[in-house]
Image 1: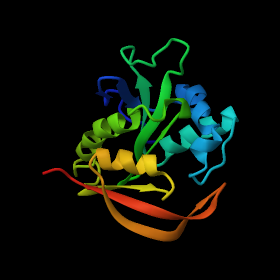
Image 2 (image 1 turned 90 degrees about the vertical axis):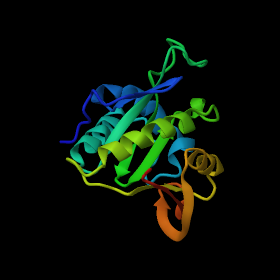
Image 3 (image 1 turned 45 degrees about the horizontal axis):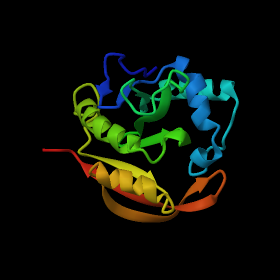
Image 4 (image 1 turned 60 degrees about the vertical axis):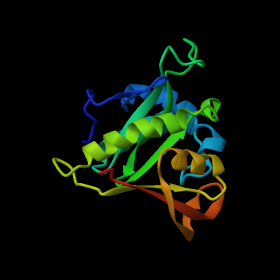
Amino acid sequence: MVVVDPSITAKTERLLLRPLKLEDADDILLIRSEEECMKYTSLVASDDIEKTKAWIQGCFDSPINWNFCIELLPSAPQYSTESPRVIGMIGAVRAPEIGYMFNTNYWGKGYATEALKAFMPMFFDHYSGGEFERFEYSVAMTDPELVASQSVLKKAGFKFAELREKDFESAVLGVRDTMVFKMERPT
């Protein structure tokens, strides 16, 4: 079982990145139940808490997953005690591939860029050839229609690498092209 060491965290001005836990299921469900959020994935939106718990457990069971939750810090403008504790997720989906996903209420506020900039040094440190494989780069995949995600990747230092035609099937949109972005290990 791959459960991220709870001492591995990153803090930014507005966010805390910390390991995903099974107790996050209610907040993760808010994200996974949003059709707009899920339409560019291989899964359909679901409001089934048991499926969400199973998905989290699947992350723990996979030796190639390394996932974190993104929380708003009390200093963030949108912070409220009524808000979900977890507003997004980020991690190594299938290292060296990384991915992120946010509750749509938090789109367009710069949180994804902020989280990705904080996550990438953690990624390269984790995958540096000690206990885990060393990767000289990371990749992120996005749909050509997801211009905002492409912007996030570029702001965080990723470069467009290639367009793969008809290589991904969205459960909602069908067969799609994929834009691949790449970040080299910093020297």
